[in-house]
Image 1 (cartoon, rainbow, N blue to C red):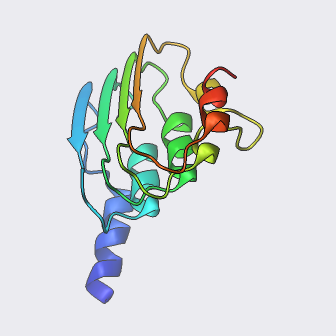
Image 2 (cartoon, rainbow, N blue to C red):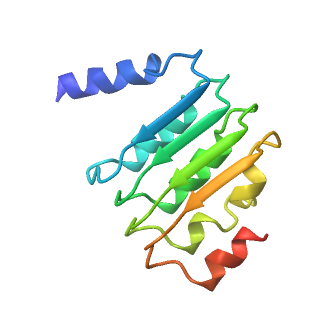
Length: 135
């Protein structure tokens, strides 16, 4: 357990992704033991010069708050963002609705030119979630 704790502390104090990376494609599909804390840590440690980011989380147990964390932590100069949440069993309408008084799309950087979101097969999405897209 001490080894896990020291590894976690090391990862938090020394991000793994080099700060000079401008394009990042990360596929974590079917990582069923992936925690939301890890997703939030990833979001807050994205390189500041990142302009293109693609994250595949198909069939991962992602919480609604992780979607907001990714949006709020997007680097200021980000131009292209692809988030694939296909078949994520735990996502609900709240993933896109207002959180902390801000809808997900309001939290994204104004430099964003391309946004590709996929929630295919997310059975807990309803009309409410789709309406949040236009908010």
